[in-house]
Length: 245
Image 1 (cartoon, one colour):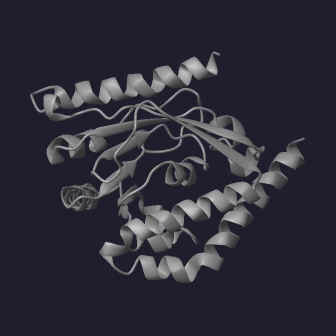
Image 2 (cartoon, one colour; image 1 turned 180 degrees about the vertical axis):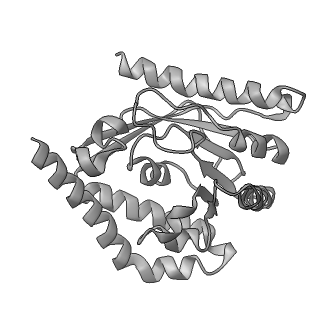
């Protein structure tokens, strides 16, 4: 069983890389100019859908209400699997970018995006972190949605989540845009954060997209902590309800 899980993990990652390199000329073109970001999002969606299909993954999204992805927002989700990032690319639309750790600049696939559209952050440098936050704030103010994982890294104890960092919520409040919570319900079961050693299994990935939260009411003192806590509880309750089904 363990060998089959590891073989599946290698197969899926190979499919991700293969489809990416076949599509590379299109990705290169789309990342050259800011006005091509919506097209880039559609390319990412097609890439991830095809890789999922070739990797024997299905997906099911449930939306609490219809979402207008043409308007900027800060999208936050729990993070416990290598499936999370490609899956969120399938479930959203519009002009968006990611914020992620600086090590992704060395990733053979993701580095193209983090050298152009997405924003890397060096969490070991306060100055670099500040500059990255200012960069994404400017992008959001210019109409681009931001996707990040407030846990800061993948949880290896899922379905338990790690404590949320405040960056995502400060950006949303300062830019006066809504927060969109997203719960990945079972990605950790299909491909856990330690998938490189534990492997993975095929299956249907399940996602719940919550209603957006207006951040205007959280500008007062203490609002940042309150917003972070409320979003944590929203995602965590949905995750725990699913885990204890």
